Length: 183
Image (cartoon, rainbow, N blue to C red; front, side):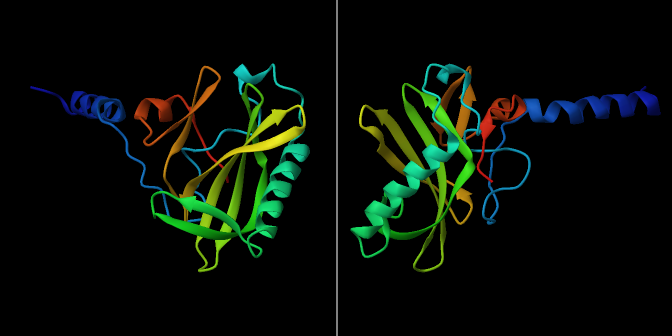
């Protein structure tokens, strides 16, 4: 028969094991960006595997993203247009801000910037902008709809200095702090 103390010890052990036995899901919240806890964008610091990249400043990268967005908006009646493959429609967006604290070197001359946009209907979109260093300067390589009204469509996971996009986040990635976010 178990004593009260041993029951509490057993119960405490089980409570501590629950996160390791089951998977985690991330529902996110409807806020601008999810709050403290897990994250889902690369950090502001270059990843360890990106040390061979040029010493591009955050300000220069942010300005290159703004210039790219402004140039595309000038051709589209003042809106930055992005195709949303999930909603299957063209989005007409206005830049709110480029997040200067979330600009990262991803390796091989590719840089990442997180930017917030607002649609004509008032929805908030978090768009990931990828820029590549070329002999003629930074060139936009890709854009992706990362969040809609704070709900993530994918997550950034860092593993041994390499960033990858994933549709879900495992409890192991959360435990090791591999998941990153803009805020």
